[in-house]
Image 1 (cartoon, rainbow, N blue to C red):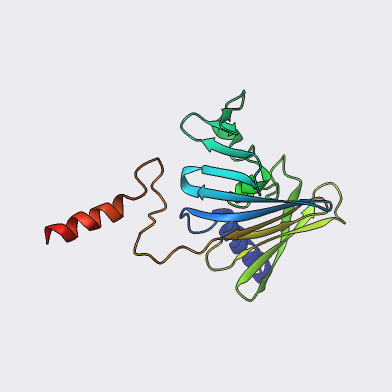
Image 2: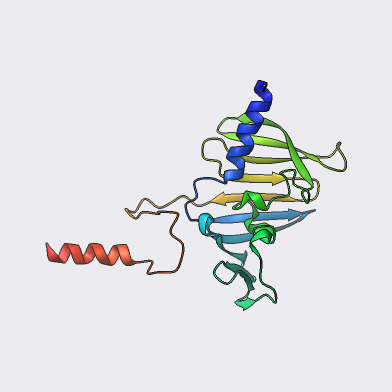
Length: 197
């Protein structure tokens, strides 16, 4: 394998991983033509859990992985998803959180495939070529070290994800824990510990 092919393979592997797997909040920008929409998103990548609310005060969508249902404004969509349709059916606001949902990996239904990679500072960009017209290109950029997705550009679509920094408040995010629970449990446990000392 020559160096450029090896570098491309390594870059694809990192990009497909989607990052560190920890839960996060962020802002997603979706542009089609000159129309741009913003969404506040909350994601637990390893649990396939996500929610997206159109800003400033628009509709919301979320995914319930236990029931395999996407909800719009709290109402179940009329169909449930099967494992093979996840994450292909995820909407644009959360696609960068789940890179396998992007149509860029050369699979039979994908429109693009990676043909080269370039490193720019702390980021890596995959150059994408259209399957049907080899003169059309796109790009997918992610953080080189972590694999966290940042942007996706094609002739018809622009997606950008800005993750919010994790607060340094002494709380821990284990990332792999999915489900609902008491979000303030750690604080209450600390208070009980302090009163017992």
